[in-house]
Length: 216
Image 1 (cartoon, one colour):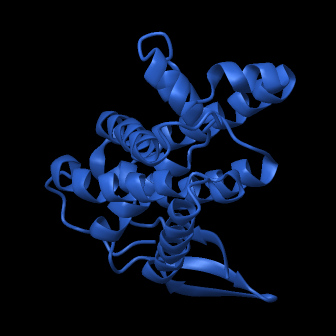
Image 2 (tube, helix red, strand yellow):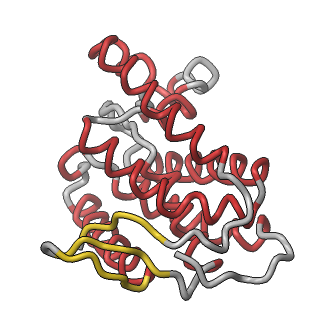
């Protein structure tokens, strides 16, 4: 099942931050492509380098959130941000949402750092922050529906199923990466799990007084 969209009829605001984040991720990736390996080495988050010089490597905590390993990585992340981010932004408000997004990204990075403190492999991607958005979505829109492409048909399924499948994949992939003391396939799965848990917890602090909406 490939998610392609949702029902935004109950959304009350234009998701300016979500659109801006998507644009920044695409722009940063294009700069990354032109800069090559030197750009990645400089701006990606490298655990052992950060621990050796936290103040000098501080900016990579944020720059790494807007970098991606390839077009598939970028498109997959932006698809999930586009489907789920607008609804969460609508509930939080623009300012709270950007703060929430960045905090989830930081939590994801530090979760990965705990399990790979001696690694010199560059960590990059918006996956951890987007995982936080998914964690918030589950709490805010438990009845949400998502349109998915199944074969040649477009059907509606519960957002919980789509997010649940994603969680299961990240959890078991994360266990595997711990067991092998490496990042499976170069993907920081522990960061995904850390970001999701952070988003779930932070939602209790960031959500407003609006009643929950059954949207997708």
